[in-house]
Length: 101
Image (cartoon, rainbow, N blue to C red):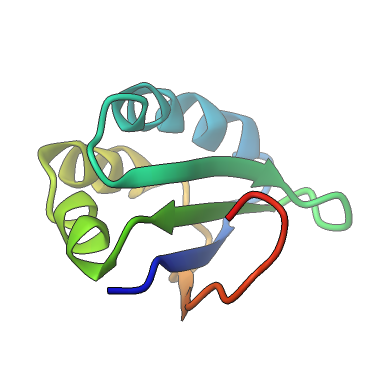
């Protein structure tokens, strides 16, 4: 199976992006030992102070599904509830080449 990736745009309530970063820390710690998760990076949008992005790369779609259904993900969604300024935009992509693959 090919690798799969996800790009997530996370709009935050005005002034809450720092709180979102703090809320993400347990997930960032969790993915360090999560089988099948190759890359998981939280980014801050340079052009919008109320947006964060996550880039995720998995060995395959099964690994992405396991991550999405994990207890750590459920805890993250609970922590983000009051911080989000709208629904996250999730874009699933299939990497085909480049440095780091």
